[in-house]
Length: 192
Image (cartoon, rainbow, N blue to C red; front, side, top):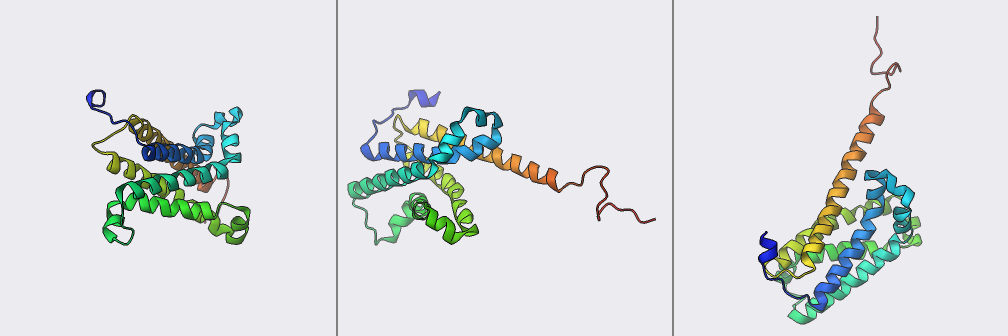
């Protein structure tokens, strides 16, 4: 109820770019999570479409995040050589570093060159997901715009979807590792 009574600021250009970057970023996280948590979504074609354009959407998200950061740096006259700046904006800077690594390696050459390490590097996106959430909560506290509740709800729903995926993946791995009934394995053989 408090949300309905608080004053919401109109959003700035930088906030809008941050929201657009968040929206594009969430779209890159959805395909795999939707397919695993809601298998029926495979029939809609939406996860496949997102998967097909994931790299492009991810690069768009990175580009929008660059613009978001650039405008804020310019508006607030940040000193990039002052360590305090990096402590105050730890979540945003960390997320930006991760998105930069992902953007740089978002090409076929990197996939071939890095091989298995490419997939390990891409897992950093889930760390960025939590850092971005923290960034929004921390930096928008006290001066929410009309976009803030929408962004927080969207990233929170994405995190819940991701956690559901992790739970389903763990259960699937447990079931695969359990011996089938009636099947004799080295562990359940009885010596008479």
